[in-house]
Amino acid sequence: MGVMMDSAVVAVVYHSDPEVLLECVWSILESMPADGVVVFDTSFSGEARRVAQVCGVTWQDGSRNAGYAWALSRVADEWAGKFDVFVASNSDVRFVDGALARLVAHVRELRGVCYALQKRKTGAVGRYSVQPQLSRADAVARWLGFGRRRIGSIAESTVERAAESVAPEMIPAGYAGSGAVIAVPADVWVASGGLDRDYFLFEEDRSFGTRLEELAVPAYLCGDCVVLHDGGFSSRGLTVAGTLECVVSEQIAWRKHRVGPGILLWALQLAGLVGRAAATIVRSRPRERRVYVSVLGALIGGVRRGGARLYGLDGLRVPAAQARGIRG
Image 1 (cartoon, one colour):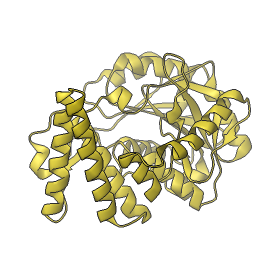
Image 2 (cartoon, one colour; image 1 turned 60 degrees about the horizontal axis):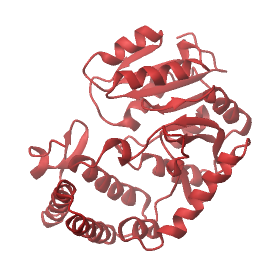
Image 3 (cartoon, helix red, strand yellow; image 1 turned 45 degrees about the horizontal axis):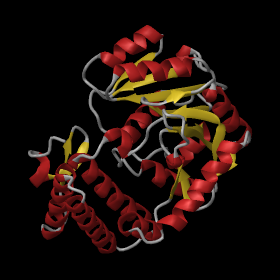
C-alpha cells in the first residue's frame, strides 16, 4: 500500500455481477493508479477477487455481507492515515471520461463533500442524484404523496443546474446527495464518522447528509463528474426483503435523528403500503401486491409484539417471523 497523504483511495463495494464490476474498475483506472483502488468483496463467489487480479487493484475480503456503510468503514479503517480523499462507490456505476479525477480535485479545492452527477445508462439525467433529508414533511410526501411535487422540485432544480454547469453546485440545506458515489475529505470522514454502519442498504446517505449539515460541512453536486448508474428500486427490483429493509431503515433513521414520534412514521408507512397494495389490484399486478401485503404483515406484526426483533438475511434485517419465508 504505497499511498501517500496526497492520494485518494477509492472503495468499491461488491456483492454481485462481476462484468459490471469490471466495467466500474476499468473506468476508475482512467483516473486513478491501481494501488489506490480497493474492491471490498461482500460475496462468497471469488468473482471479485478475480476481477481485482485482472485489473491489478487491491481485493479486500469482507467474509460476510453486513451492508454498504459497514463495508466502506472497513476499507477506511484499513487505510486510515494513507489518504486525503476517500471515495465511496457502488460497483454498478461507470465513471465517464475521467470523472473521478475531477471529483477528487473538487474535494481538494472546496474542502467539502462532493457527489457525482448520476445519469441513467440511457443518458438521461438521474433525478436521484439529490434527495430530501429526513423530515416529517418528507415522510408524508414519500408515503402519502402530499407535498411530493414541492419537495421534489427543489432536488430536481439542483440536479438541473448542476447538469448545465461546469462548476460544482452546492446542495441546499435540507437535502443530501446520493450514496452511489461520494468523495469525502479524510478529516471530514473522521469527524462525521463516515456512513453509519447501522444501515444496511437504505438511508445511510440521507443520514450522512444530515450529519454533514450539523457539522457545517458543505456538500456539492458536480455536473462535470458524470457516472452512469440506474439507481434505487429501478435496478434492484421490488422484493419483500428490499422493501422491508427500506421501511426498517427509515425507522432507524427517525430514531437516530429524532425526526418525530415513531408511531407517526409507523402510521404513515402503514397507510402508504395499504395504498400501494390497493393500487396493484386496480392495475392487476399480483406479484407487487404480494410484496406489499407481506411487508404490511411484518409491519403490523412487529408493533403487535411490541417492536419487531430484526434478524439477518444475507445482511438484510427482517422480523423473526418472516426470516425463514422471505427469499425475494
